[in-house]
Every structure is written in C-alpha cells, then in structure tokens.
View 1 (tube, rainbow, N blue to C red):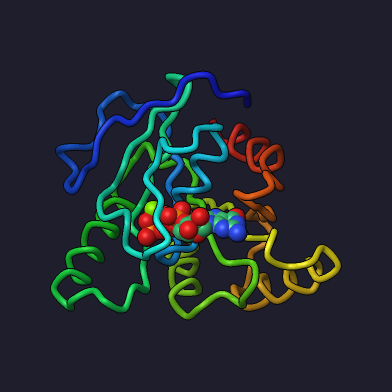
View 2 (view 1 turned 90 degrees about the vertical axis):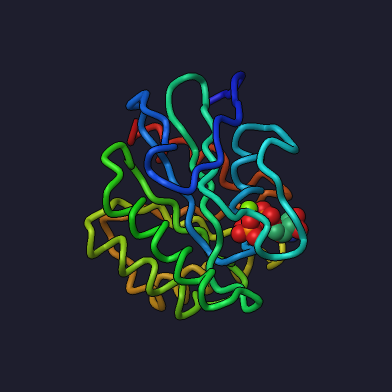
Length: 193
Ligand code: GTP
Ligand code: MG
C-alpha cells in the first residue's frame, strides 16, 4: 500500500472514546521501546506521525491513526516497563484486556518483538493471549538492522520456537531504520482488510 493519507484521530483510554466508523483496526502490542510507534511511522512513511522516544513508556494510551480513510493503526502502550507502579500496571492491563477481548472491529494484532533477542516472558504471554482469544497475529520481528543478515535464519527459528509460533500466523522481519519488511508487512495487513 502506498499511503497518501494518515492522520492521528484520538488517544483513547476507554471504549466510549474508540471511533465508531466501523473501520477495521490493526493493533500493535509489544514491549515498551521495542519500536511499535516507529513501525507505524515507517509503514506510512511519516517520520513523526506516532510519537517515538528512546525512553520506554512513551505511548500511554490507545492511539488511533486513520490510514487512507480505510483502517486504523492502533498504537498500544508497551508492556514490561519496570518503572511503572502496580496501580498503573493494573490499569494498563485492564485497558488492554478490554480492548483486545471486546473490540469487534479488531482485525489483526501485530505482536512486535525485538529480533535481536529471544521473546521475553511478557512477549510469550501476550502471544498466548492472542491465541487464546483467537485473534490473528502478525509477528513483527523488528530492529533487524542491528543483526547481520547471516544470522537472520537462526534468530527467526529462536523467535518462533520461543513463542511456540502457530503456522497459521504470519511472521515478518522488519527494520524501521532500513525499511526491511515494509512490502511484506503491507501484503499481510492488506489481506486482512
Ligand atoms: P513505547 O511507546 O514506549 O511502548 O515504545 P515503542 O514500542 O513505541 O518504541 P519506539 O517506536 O518509540 O522506539 C523506541 C526506540 O527504538 C527509538 O529510539 C527508535 O528510534 C528505536 N527503534 C525503533 N525501531 C527501530 C529499528 O527498526 N531499528 C533500530 N536500530 N532502532 C529502532
Ligand atoms: Mg510508542
């Protein structure tokens, strides 16, 4: 998809604030600082549409971006950020659970993981959650620019094995630095629209 139109719609914390257009939603889940917001920016070719930061915990609400007046990317706050209080963590969990279990227009979950390292316990849990609720998943293994291509195969096997990756799901190696995986990711996303 060549994106000409991408706009920020709303930062939502509760279902009343979710848009009611009925457009499909592609939601991004992943560890804090893994590169979810950067993924959105790279995919729509806009450097600063979604706020990114070198410090984890930048995205705190469900941020809706309308793409080509056709579907939404939903940027979800990251998990696994140590400096978050218990209360905040509980609030976060509730918000995500509500969204992922009740949102009828949710079409595909993007599980963004760091390609350099095996998925964390939190990554595994998130993926299992999607499997349990039968939400289709595209695993985006990002920051691929940080490891040599000769090691990609090995890292892909480790990532899939650690997640107990379901062959029904999709897997894309990605880099927001080099643009690796953009076309492949679009192909998968478009097949769900
Ligand atoms: P939260 O909003 O805190 O959950 O983080 P996030 O997942 O949205 O991460 P974000 O996109 O803000 O990126 C975090 C940091 O990783 C930034 O410094 C990015 O520049 C960097 N980054 C993201 N993607 C890539 C990538 O593919 N390659 C490299 N080298 N750096 C990346
Ligand atoms: Mg973010």
